[in-house]
Length: 191
Ligand SMILES: [Fe+2]
Ligand SMILES: [Fe+2]
Image 1 (cartoon, rainbow, N blue to C red):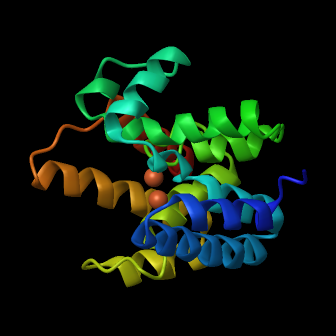
Image 2 (cartoon, helix red, strand yellow):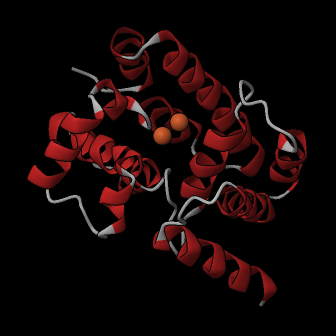
């Protein structure tokens, strides 16, 4: 079996509810365009985009069970808001069930929910494309898209800033990994 973008496009079409599938295709289209723009591997970007939310085919309870079984709980905060672990679950599935060995793809999928310090260009691209794909509609999303299209680093920093502000405003806890990611990128860009 050739586990390429076409394979995973068909898989998520079958496994994910329609709205989630539509979001996934939105991320794929936008990730491919950004990869082309910045000279990154377009096939890798599509594969990561198509699979980033595939673990959402499982209920949240099942996601927690699997994450424990597969040793994917890294922070106590992961369990405060278990929605954050589906990226790591998908990366684990890609590596162990579908023999995807490209570490950059696996990292991009695993870290699309929270980020991580020292993200690669592909990781930043998937993190940001997830937030700003064409189906997203929130105040300021166009500005984020423009920033991203102009500069992947600055655009990703703007996406992180947006997320941190949004979580603060809505009185939600901010996962330590997101704060580390935000501070890391801010420091790297001001050097
Ligand atoms: Fe996700
Ligand atoms: Fe997503």
